[in-house]
Length: 185
Length: 185
Image 1 (spheres, rainbow over the protein chains, first blue to last red):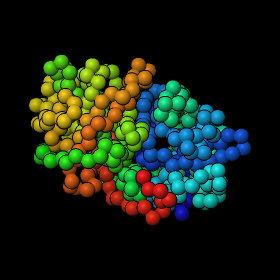
Image 2 (image 1 turned 135 degrees about the horizontal axis):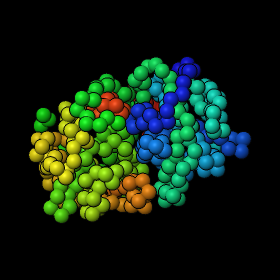
Image 3 (image 1 turned 180 degrees about the vertical axis):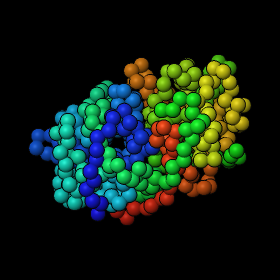
Image 4 (image 1 turned 45 degrees about the horizontal axis):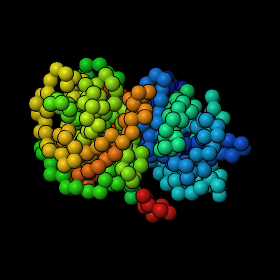
């Protein structure tokens, strides 16, 4: 099992560095005395400032009501050591179990939101609901990242990228092409 | 430079296998005698059936008008051999140049849409605009993939995943956890 990671703050506008490559994330939420974790693969960065991220959270998930009700969540970034927990969280329901206890994960206190973060994850992005215009039609939530923190090491975490059919791509080598950019973002 | 790739058809509902891991894509469009290519990193799968994908296409791109006007595009999947073209396409404007000619890419005929596909890419997803409700507010387009095709080999293409600051993560190893799923999707 992965160990807890100290995660210093960093500017929210740089959250894209971790989220844009398309990792599976663990979304934590809390509302009316309940807490839950869900596995999410359908997310995209939408804006630098404010720091917006769009997430497809199916209404069949127990987390849907907690997030809708509280208007908050934490997006946690798991790495490859957590792959079994990631799958088990995605294949169980918070109606039946407390997923922190069931899968040996440590809830940590967030700074801005009530939802707990996951200490064993590499990074945590505290979010407030920014726009629910597409929630009814597609279960698509636009969140604003209001606080970002990430472990300093490793610089390139081995994130998980779901491909369907039970298979995950693990983040590979990093190549640098800054010299070809006219304006680097 | 990458060579052209034969891309047999496959079911549109399986497009997630390529798009969900978060690759940078090349979006091609055509309208009123103009054609263009743009580099896009902000996209997410949104639904299996219909096969929906949400894309953030900034209105500062020349492609924005072509896609808005035609209501169509092709999402092309480049692999690591095309990294320099991917960066150059993202750092130039179709107002000034024809990007197919400028970067040595071959336009191919799509089946359902007018926009050309890129022969050198691993996969091509022909798209029709499905919902423009968030275009005004966020430049967020919801497309329906109406035709999907991909090269048979390699089975796990070395896709590019942008991290900001000129750096790309290249798709790494694939791990299988199907045995832990209660219902595999």
